[in-house]
Amino acid sequence: MSDKKSGYVLRQYSQIADIPALDWDACAGGANPFVSHAFLSALEASGSARPENGWIPQHISFSANGLIEAVMPAYGKLHSYGEYVFDQGWAEAFENAGGTYYPKLQICVPFSPVTGARLLRRSGSTLSTLDIGNALKALVAEKNMSSAHVTFCEETEWQGLAHAGWLQRMGVQFHWRNQGYKNFDDFLGALSASHRKSIRRERRDANAAGLTFETLRGDDIKTEHWDAFYHFYQNTVDRKWGSAYLTRDFFTQLSPRLGDKVILMMAFYDNTPVAGAMNLLGDNTLYGRNWGCIGQWPFLHFELCYYRAIDFAIENGLERVEAGAQGEHKVQRGYLPQATYSAHFFTHQGLSDAVRNFLAEERKGVEANREILADYSPFRKSAT
Image 1 (cartoon, one colour):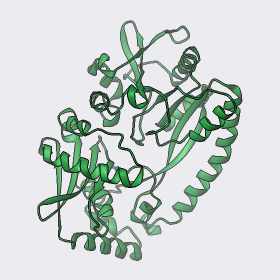
Image 2 (cartoon, helix red, strand yellow):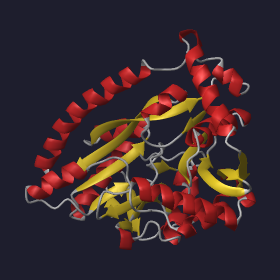
Image 3 (tube, helix red, strand yellow):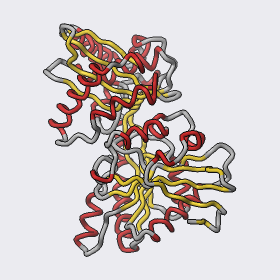
Image 4 (tube, one colour):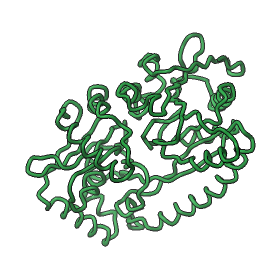
């Protein structure tokens, strides 16, 4: 498909392996591991994101003069699971009215509610977000798809797509930011006395349960660690959601593909692993991704996923920790509300109008909730 306005050639691929890793990563950059060729190819090679479970790879490139200047992780979706920006209500309403919502085009990182660029451009490219947005609209119309969705994108992409006629949606996550802290106690010093006391009690109780902790990176993560972690992951998924998106082989492939960017924090009792939290390391961010445990341990989730992540970030001079989706309880532990962004285009005008009205009302609630949550900040006013 050739975009006459921009002068670029748009091409789709049925597997990311068909796009040279050097070209993909030249567009993606190295700041965010989730959009790297290594991470996305691990999802496909492991059978985690595949047509049989409703994720049909349809990755996109834009080329000029034979050079790939932009790429996008894109999937034809037969459902709305594993996305964390929920549109099932839109799908149900449209189908009840006689429409066909699936397949749709989803530009995202599967199973990963992680903020970052989605319209990945090589440095120096003149391809604009407006051009990309218009080309994607033409693509879904040509493919007879109901819609296209760009989720957890950067705010600049979100604004650029709005200029191309896409609808804007906002959400909230909770991120911790490093204010130049020297150590964890220095961070605690920025909190109110009551919150300092509460966090110290939680850490004390978690560390008084007879557990030992270990942080593993890259090649230090062995098969037995992943075996244990996958058991934890399945156990947690079974209790909360009912189905595991990620296969066991996905975790095996992470360490060799991403090296020291894979951070696995584990808890042991009598040398037996009982819990684990998997993180990925970006240029300035630690991304908490999956966690699981067996047994009941006081405050272990907070210790392994939140507090030890802060320890790691301070020790390594990182700017922030993103600890995944949802969780208003994170605010009291120093993870403050941050806006997330997604953009949506619908080929059916009636559906587009209905979603536009819905989003206008939803945003009022999202923004009001952010303001309320900000009032519960644990930081002393003089420390913010």
